Image (cartoon, rainbow, N blue to C red; front, side, top):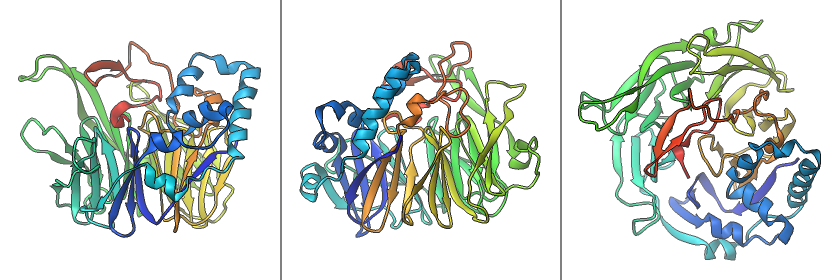
Length: 420
């Protein structure tokens, strides 16, 4: 099943999508915010393909929820779903500039440092990291502009990557290591702590732990334990995270034949490492305290001699940037080449509605690629991509979202930290 591709013309540096809004950081120092739901609603597609289009670009959770019932095990239903997405992939999905203008919620000056290194949206707040530090502004729609012009500087430390969850920011700070910024403030009143001293150029959440990747050395897993505690000032027990130990990637991948490996990265239940034209994959199950890490399998890159520049794990597979360009090892282990050298690219593994998105920015346009094969893949056996499991009452991770206690998915499932 080929991915769908929607093209947004323009010169951009970065993109973020959150709660029906697409924020585009322009090369001219502006931020364009589009009403994403309205834009998708204006796509000229056949009536029988509208549900597929909405599932692909607006609400990936629609079909994941249906898939959890087991209905997609029916071969005839699989054929119908595959045909719908295949037919949609044959249609040109490129809004005109007039349609983009009509769905624009605003264009404003970019008051963040530009060009920035990374960005993240969490709980209706936009975070931007750069050499000048970490900055934040509201983007929930309650201010005059789509992104508030009231910008707070959270840290002066140069940061190359920022990822948010558990009311915290994970920060990759190069030679300064891997840090955590507590959005609520720690018990002693401080907000920042260094969790690993090794060089860190990228970071990502692996459930309630943090993985730090390095472009110059070994990656590390900052392994946290999570327990329910009642603070002195709290009315009820809450989940609290405590740093348990920092695990180097040499220990994580010790069960593989060749001890030598290169760049490593992670997200949720998957920890990956590039090695000799392939990718080693370890399974991470933090609720299994006796054996949280185990060997899972090996993915073939079929790109001998090419170095991995950067990589991410998404729900739909593993995205790898090589010297020659971008490829996706899908969760069914087919390989998709993304043509052209990207300016930047982004996935949304902690999203709820856009976890099937891959945003690829080229010189004169943004490509929003939507991968929809994963609905038909066995989540418990796949090696490439985050595994979407079923909630388990004994070991699940309850969390409050919109004032309602919800059940986290324990076995490799979605985390609602970046709810959209």
